Image (cartoon, rainbow, N blue to C red; front, side, top):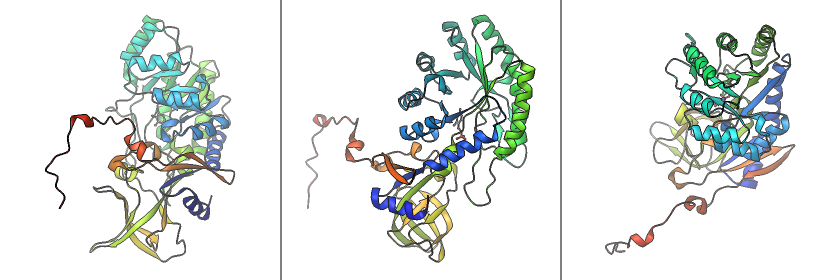
Length: 412
Ligand SMILES: *Cc1c(COP(=O)(O)O)cnc(C)c1O
């Protein structure tokens, strides 16, 4: 989709607005599937937390994707969107036994990431097969911060705890049908990932009834020009070869699973917001938009660099701007950005707004969360309405009978 389409959508649906391009989600899904076409059984489980609108889940379901979930609510959204329970994997961290039991009762594959819950679950439900999340403790050196579950991480069962894990499995007579790891960070160095995979293969040999090995996610996508991205084709080639070799050694054709979030939806998303004020100060020119980190928190929370373009004036002279939001504290989307000359009323477009953007939006400053639109086969479909004042008050309980307005409030 192009800038003209996006600009037209802000006229039709207003701004701020999230727009998702279904074609891009589809092509990313195909790109990843294609990279692993040499694996007889491949399963991509879309990580719902990246973008959990039911219509997006339906699109991914129609492509043949499974679903990776981290809360019972995401499980329920997935079921509502038409995923079969067996196509959903529940990979929470630090949740209660009850929540895991609830997911299992819905028929969802559960993935357990600590020995305490594993022992409790196995004792109560030895017949329900369970996947275990392993922390391979692989540290990447030097150039990047890819740490495949570092030693201080709260995620997963440490590879060093395998003897204890095996004892629990043995004593409870439970069945481990999958093993899993998730790096949690952007994979830049494929070799580090492959090294962690070897640890997973080694671990897998301890379990005789495996059906799948889940390599998690962490695929890095480009945010700005010159950004490194995970070379999925190279990873596909190398891991396919190793995986197929391992299956031979193991004596059974296992399923290779991934749980991509960002890779599938990041680049498909656009966030559109109107410029309220262009403000010259002694140090910079601010472009203040009709939005803030309540709508897109990634720059403030993670220092993410979302490309910002002025779709109202694409041919304008380029100037330097600091693009800021209206939240009453530091609220910067980008500093010193070269953007085509901005006038008040222009629409700015933030790229890579598909993953972890709307799902992290809040009502902070009592603002409405934006509408969401799905662009599918050249047509726009509203998939979430803009909030209204009722949404702000929804669930608030007004105990007005407790308080009298102060008599001192005099109006001059
Ligand atoms: C968040 C998460 C993912 C998705 O990670 P991306 O970097 O968005 O691909 C996958 N698996 C688990 C368990 C997660 O928590």
